[in-house]
Image (cartoon, rainbow, N blue to C red; front, top):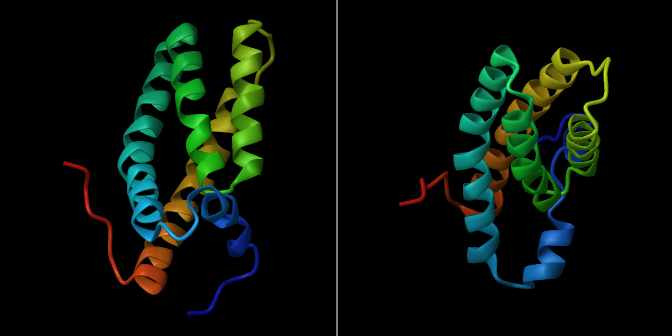
Length: 130
């Protein structure tokens, strides 16, 4: 499989491997949790933005930021951490749409990359959580 430029920066499993060691099943489970939770969370965040429900938005952003850390995307994890902090402070002039656009685009690429990793490295495709 050819990795396109920048794609290897989307997902870095080294921290997860350091944490879980040789527990391949655990790594697959965490990747599947990301696949299961992120798409509906992004839809919910979009809806909360439209409703301007800032408290619920902050809580949702806070709840998903660690998923990006688990898959080694420190940039998105940090971006969500800053968004969370700005929402907590009721900071004016937050570029919600810009953040949302970046989150959607990068999350889609991360999801695609995780599917590739699961297939190539673990010989599995996504198995939804029961």
